[in-house]
Amino acid sequence: MSLIIEKYYYEEKKQWSVSLIGEVDIYTAGQLKETFIKLIEEKKEDIKINAEELDYIDSTGLGVLIGALKRLKQENKDIILFNVKPSIKKLLNITGLDKIFIIEG
Image (cartoon, rainbow, N blue to C red; front, side, top):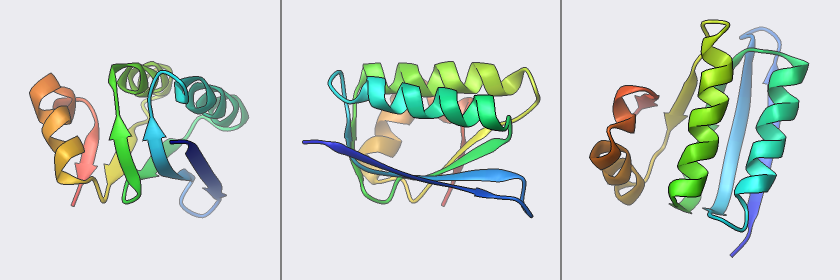
């Protein structure tokens, strides 16, 4: 499967909106990492990720999220995940990542 990344910057909210569609795994994690690097270089602001259509994420993908969060935390910014599917929410709980990312809904 592939990964589609839709991104938009909301000036009034000072926040990136990112929708992840498909799967983040060893084959697509590089694409996500590249996107996050560009976003953070452009504007170091919170990144709000709509995970409604994110079907799967593996440890490589989680590593990319953690790397992006580390860069954002230097500026006291966060990654917010929302519309997270139960299977992915379970993975975040098991790994303890639900404690470092903001998860809404």
